[in-house]
Image 1 (cartoon, one colour):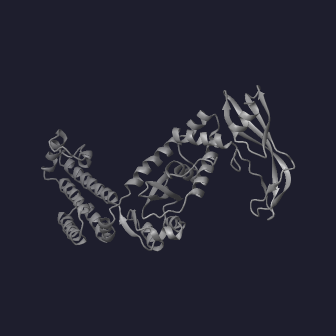
Image 2 (image 1 turned 180 degrees about the vertical axis):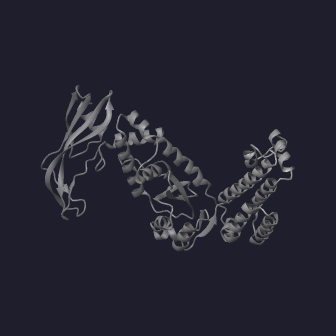
Image 3 (image 1 turned 90 degrees about the horizontal axis):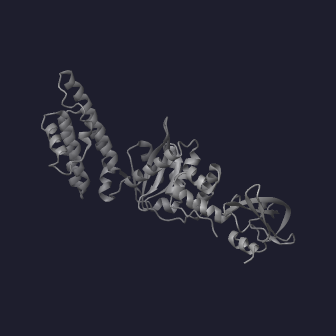
Length: 407
């Protein structure tokens, strides 16, 4: 096989283009591959499908896969086409995506490197390109993936927030629970942001959504009620558990302060005892924990009330679940523990969304797992100054999109 044929096949050159020259540039440590076509070639207007007028030529250069540690550079003059609509565009070449600075095969390898490295710095070092070029590849890959994404019915979704950086910079994230993927991300944690996220969905997808797992924030609730006519709101059980954990800790802090004023340090350093799960009741930790439960402490009462609410999620019938909640709320008020009373009031006000969990046993656990991955991306990037950069990286790694360029 001749060297011209080798590079034509490697690069993906097709008629009317052909490799006309291959040169080693020792100074630049490059292999320069010249690709040309006849000036008399007829070009088609992609909009009207009629013949397009050639309105000049522009010199272009693309990076290809390295040859024996030499950078391989493709050089060609590309025609500028005057379309019937009046627009002027560059003709599409078979070896590269429109606007790309790499050949398709090079871009494909860069995408594989990003997926393997998880950091743009690592992928840039491996592929011997700049971080800015990596960002460009990711942006084009996500744009391709979103264009290829076929509308598919989602029946169960999650609506969640994620802190982008300090000082209350948030994003609102829509998750396809059944497919464990992030569908889209918008900037902000507001009703407007959530409404935008949901109204941007095709109408048939909005109508197919049966349940939305979310927290009890009013802005999200209103956005779902206004935009998803067939969806039940399901309040996330981990969100309720979080509120109960915080209430328990407030009781512990207050009681510890009072006891230490009396010279009693029994609760000192016990914070994490109250948040553990003791699967083995005979373990040393479980035996020690029972010492605190038997010490007639308000914190022990709060812990028992917190733990007892776990039974709610096992009910199958609304009537039985409602009787349980009524009794549980009564026990909260009988205890006189103000932090838990606030949680009881919240449960009472949002009881329908909690009961919907019996019909749709979904949570934002998938979203929380994806949030951990998002945090990893943010940490690896040492902070992302622009929201759009953050969005691109989330969808690239967690959107399950078809990212590779077409061959």
